[in-house]
Image (tube, rainbow, N blue to C red; front, side, top):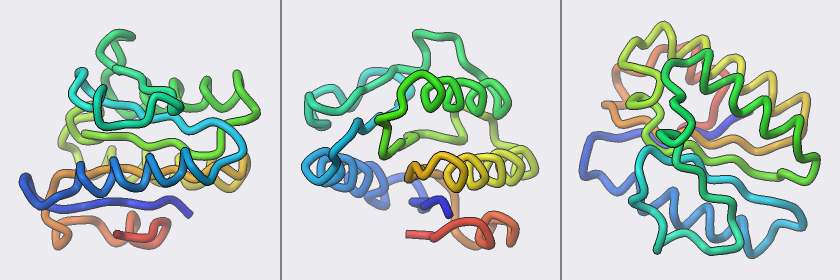
Length: 138
């Protein structure tokens, strides 16, 4: 099961992500990865986490992001947690695409035993039921 931090702009989602990522770094015996769009979290996330600016890799769309995350998992067996900030800005505003992406991340999380958290900037009421079925909404 994946975790989803959901809420409208200004509701404190990024603050929750920062707190959870830093907590994971302090508790994890492996590696914590935080994927962001832009360099806005550089000073907030512990330097012990792997902070990735997705824009540097030209990743756009759900399939590209999913492949990128699978590559992270395949390349490093010590990853324990992955956090994705600004998920909809990376994959687009299509809720169907988000549903498919969330289902794939849920399968990857189960297969690789990695905790995956997605930050979604939207009203919780518009989240499709399929996403709620494969995630814990925080």
